[in-house]
Image 1 (cartoon, rainbow, N blue to C red):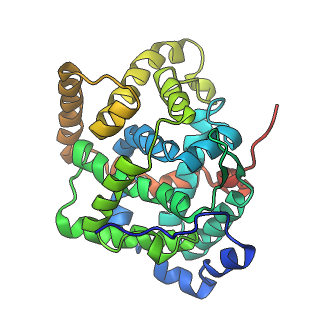
Image 2: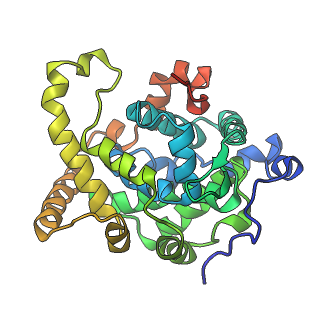
Length: 312
């Protein structure tokens, strides 16, 4: 049985939005403890090649796709969007209760402004409960699947613990308990139902696929110029391969994406190589979270993780 979404999915009333946020005294109980399964697995460097998969799951939701297309700078600055997503995710997991609680409030406040008219003429709001919860759910789905294919596979007990911890983190974002399934079996059924009944080929899907195939240079001077010219084509190939390869067949068909036996074999070879590197992989690559937060401390303090769109 899948989790039931609320029957009314329109923009939340301000009073309702206020009551879904936990009080500061609750923050400590909602963040993963150091050494927990989420702490150990959520920042493995290999997960980054599954970022495109998570993003496609998100933007194929009609509300999320419309919001990203109208309010996000993804087309102009895909690397910036990736960094901002990692900023908020790693702060929630590794930043401690106070930082996680404040980040959750910041993210929800930012999403209150995201509203408009979808391409089908339907009014949308980023805080529609099912859409808002789905974005959080896709990150859990991507982490578990990416570890299964490229990293350290979760056993059944680890998946259950991870989902319980990830679901608790959702409370810091204002995601109600009833908006997400209570266990992994029902979560898997929920994802399948979303794929078959809710996710569609939105205009944002094509924009994400184009950006992944021809990634723009990141705002890092050392990676611009000739270095980027050399790296861009193989990087785009790997991002396309992993993103399309991780998608369920139903979404590949919906998005009109061709997937051949040769590409599947290539993905399996890449996955095998990445998994085989686990025993010799440095600990700082298996868990990049704390080091990443030190590197991005100034940007996070400025509020880049929930920065408004800049026009022009």
